[in-house]
Image (cartoon, rainbow, N blue to C red):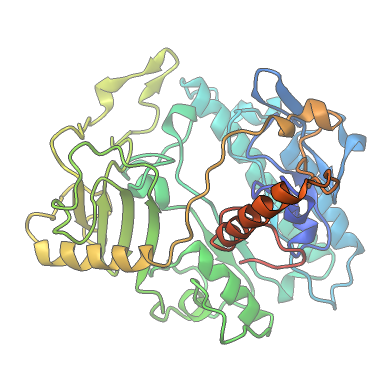
Length: 426
């Protein structure tokens, strides 16, 4: 693995090399400086964030822009690997993400873009385009290309206030509108049967795992209940997707919809809960789906948001349920929840079914022990189990045994997640 991990690191067991990757070169956090590889989470909480396997990569603290640095590492990996042997290479570029930074020469083509954030974003994306080209050339140079599959995938929509654009889709990153959840992606390979086509079938990020296992002629245990589907024939041959629904999210903590209630959800679902689900053509949203404007490119000026160009939508209209036919209305302009109450009820039931399988939420407060100052100036695993304890008196020991029993029950219910060593995840 090369690039951004962002899947937790409080214990060593959570690191990429303990979660199925043979090697890792990259960052652990969600963002940071592209040149110094430092990140400040808050005042006094700053540290270096670049790793080689399980150790801080201080040797690379030399100001190389991360997009180029990661590409160089990928080129080295491919140059030293035998193309006759299989390889899975996961490259999670930091770009494009805030902070908006790019080498100067990439700005040359974008002087006409007035909005400085949009100009920086364009420059960063040009550098990323060049990186993808260089990775593709490396696959060809070192004899991998003819038997390779390149999957380009993204995690969420753009952030208009930081140079991104989802136009003409509604909403932005962090919301459940299509602008927040519909991401850019493509598959490039000499092994594709139908090239140059557009796939409009339902595909979710969890589908990559079973798809890749199948392509690598691996086996998935039938007892494992995966969320994903093998969608290779859908992508390569244009067949219908085996997927009929996508649970976009259920957030039981975020219940800020003032007008949401169980009654508004026909007694099936509390519509104060922020959630979204897609079933075939239909998409249902409940609660407060988040910032819901349609934002044309560059409608944010350097002086701040320019609302003149925005189509403003207010959510204080008493609504907590929306229904859209996404195939006919991908821009989510026509709410059909009042016209099709039967479909609303059907999707609310599906939400309720999904929710029954949910793991209890654990959202702990920040732990001061994670401060890089206490860990050699580096972001990294910080949690240490306290093994050495004083022997309690007999009466205290009995009480403690009872407490420990209840704690163990809670832990089994998911009260304190642990990262299991050597487990690969989709």
